[in-house]
Length: 343
Image (tube, rainbow, N blue to C red; front, top):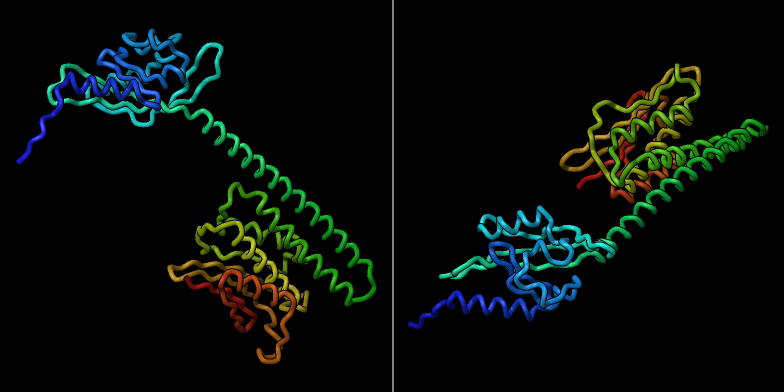
C-alpha cells in the first residue's frame, strides 16, 4: 500500500505564493493581520500598484487607502478566524481622480496539516463593464416600457376619437341599415379602446383577471348600455384572483366585449324591458371557463338553421387561439355562451 505525505507548511506556503505570483487572475495572499504576503502581477497591473511597494504592506494601506473598506476588512478577519469565507462580495473601489470600479471579491483561508500561520487567498474580479452593460440594457427596457405605455395611451385616445366620429355619423344617416352598421362599428372600436386603456394601466406583463374583468365591465357598460336603470352588466363576485399574461387577457377581453355586444344587439330587442348580462370566470385544476349570460329573448331558431354573425366568428377564432371550445346554451330565458379550456 502506498501512502502520500502532505506537504510541509513551508513548502505548501511557497507553492501558494508561486501560484499567486503566476496567476492571470488578480490575486492577493494575505496573513492573519491582513498584510500582503504576495501579489500577482495581474493584481498590481489592474489597480495601478507598484509590485515592489505591495508585499509587506497592510491591505488597507494599498494605493491611497481605497482597499480599507470596513466591511471588507471585517469579512477578511472572519475568514482568517475560520468563521466564514467571502463568496462573491461586491463593492465599489473608489480612487481619487479615477473612475470607480465595481469589484467582486472571493477569499478563502488556506489550510495545512501543520501550518505555522494563517494565510488567506483573495481573488478579485472587475465587473464594472458587465454592470454597465446590464444597466444600459435595463435603461433600454425601461425606455421601451415608457414608450409602449405612451403608445397605448395614444392608440386608446385615437380609437375613442374614431368611435366618436362613428357615433356622430350614425346619428346623421337616414338609413336604418347604415345606422346599425355604424353603431356596430362604434361598439367594436370602443371595445378595442377599452382593452387598450386597461393594458396601459397595467404595471407589468401580468394581469389579474378579477380586476381586469371588473374594470372592463364598467367601461363597456358606460359606453354601450343605453339605460342603466333597465339593463345591467355585472361580474360575478366569485371570480378568483387568477393572473395571466397580457396576451391572453387581450383575447379574453375581446371575447367578453364581443359577447356583450351580441347580447345587447340580439337579447333585448324591446328597449323598455329590463334585463341583465353577467360575466363569469372560473379556474379549476383541470382548466378554466369564461362565460357571458343574459336573460333576454334567447337565440332565434335552432342550431342547424342559425346563421353565425361577425361577433360569433370573432369569438370562435379567439377561442381557437386559446385552445378553448365554445358552447352555447339556452337558459330559458336567455342565452349562455361559455368558453372552456382544459389543461
